[in-house]
Structure formats: C-alpha cells, structure tokens
Length: 204
Image 1 (cartoon, rainbow, N blue to C red):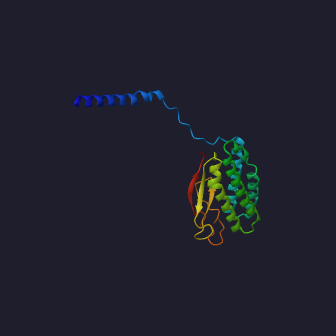
Image 2: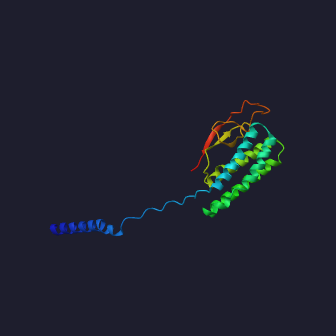
Image 3: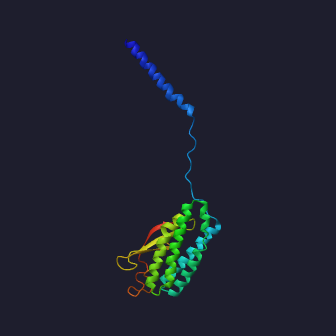
C-alpha cells in the first residue's frame, strides 16, 4: 500500500514538472513591452517662437529691476504679440489634450500680459507680471515639452509685503529681484538680491 501511494506521488510530481517546464515553452517568449507615447520633437520654427517669447519676458523682468515702466510696457506689448505667433497648432500632432491645455495656457498668459498694459502703478504691473509667470510655469512649460536652454524659477518671499511672495523666471541662477528692484521706495536697492532659486526649467 505504501509503495502504491509513493508511486502515485512520484507520478503527480512528474506530471507537474512536465506541465510547468515543457508546456510553458509553447507560449514562446513575450514580445517587447510597448514604449510610452512621448511628445514629438518640435519644429525649429516652434522652438524659435518660444525663444523669442522668453526673450521678451526676460526683457520685461529686467525693466522691472530698473523700475522702468515705459520699457516694461514696451516689452509687454512685444510679449503679447509674440505669444500669438507661437504655432501651437503644431501640438495637434501629439494629442488633442496637449493642444487644448496649451491653448488655455496661452489665453491666460495673454490676458494677464494685456492687463499689465492697462496698469499705471508699477506695483499693479508687477502683480500682473507675477500672474504671467504663474501661468507659464509649470503648466505652459510642461505642456509644450520645453526644449530650450536652462532657465530658473526664482522666488521672493516678500514681493508684495512680508507674507506675500511671488515667482519669476530667469536665465541666470543669480537672484536679481524684479519685484523689489533697484529703486524700491522703502528698501532702495538693499533687497535687490532677496530671493532664492526654487526650481530649474530645462529640456526633458
């Protein structure tokens, strides 16, 4: 009886080994896993339009540092014109969602830049500039899959008072504050370098 039980046990084990070792080979090796869908690279014209837009933004930022409202508005007007020239229709080659996201970003950015052009007070201009920045990063940069040179997101914790900070974008890691500037009515130029780098913006 014991021999019969032992024989049956060996037979079952042999069948299991056959099933797992030989039968599994019938399915063959798995094919390569599908790569995630990536955003397509942009055209040279698209990247040039983004570079030009950022140049106008940086010119605005530098005019704020100098407290030069005439130049702020000059570069803001250029910025508005340039954002309308970005060929965002190209992004339809990726997905409709990406195109719609960027289109919404562009509308918000334009709206705040146009508001800046209507302001008289440099403080109000700076508030609109801060909103332009918020609309640009992170949403706009991430949605377009930014491919340009490295930029820096910087922050002043007291841009509009002790507890009211604001961000800006710079092409240099050195902090030169566009919200407190060189001719602040209270601080003069003593807070020109107030702030810190919060993030790096670079091509993915």
